[in-house]
Amino acid sequence: MKLVAEELTGQDYISFNFYRLGTGSRLFPCEMPARTVIDFVLCLIPDPLQDDA
View 1: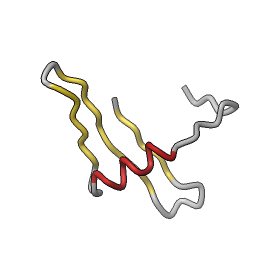
View 2: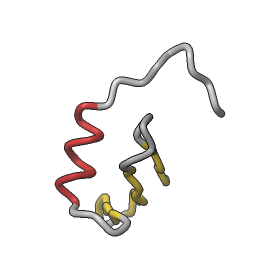
View 3: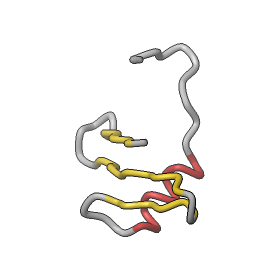
View 4: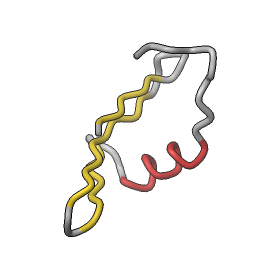
């Protein structure tokens, strides 16, 4: 799974890859600390009216 998100003002972004493996889950942040990614995901509130899929 891959997630890329840009701040609405365009000044910051989050990007990471997440793999569910037989040996356990692995998080690979892209050019940022894992803690930044984890904090973002834990605070994320998806907009149910927004569907970009």
